Image 1: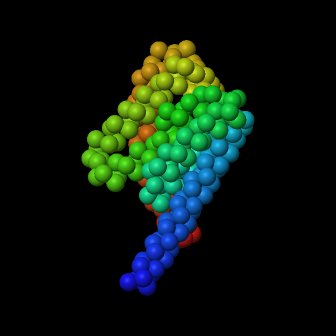
Image 2 (image 1 turned 90 degrees about the vertical axis):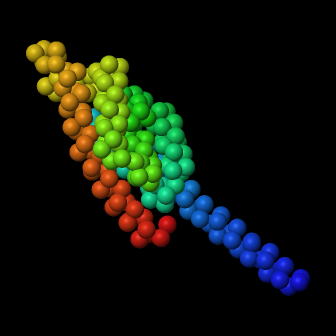
Image 3 (image 1 turned 180 degrees about the horizontal axis):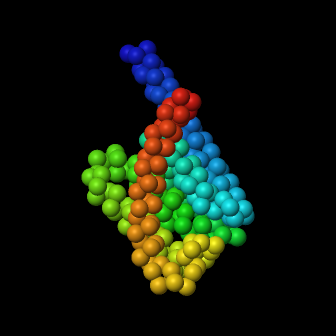
Length: 196
């Protein structure tokens, strides 16, 4: 009986160590995702050409914990990225708010909808409305972030800007959402190959 108990205790210790190693790898992957997203947002804040692509890249980085099926890791990475970017990328507050309101959470929402077998058409409509809402929020609080240097600055276009942002934002979102789903599959395959 003592021998069996000793084996059980040893087996339990091994399982605990394996779980700790698994958690350590997930924490490391989430930290890498956070660091890469913060670097992308800082680059976007200080290099004007990279504003929009930085949001996309930061959003891609938040897919790393999701590749290991960890919503908790993705949310913690999102929160850490948001806080660190708020302190380091002060030059572009509109970009940080856009990340916090939409781009940082979008991959996680996509993952949850996919795992819960949510209706795809309804899901795209809800996410498109969410994106258009985020675009309009940024437009009304930081109008120059979306319109500076674009045709939206013209006087004849300004009276239709809400219609343009709503319809254009919804159409742009559909393309963006398709791309993000493709990239999530690619990230899943890549992380699986790394045996992380």
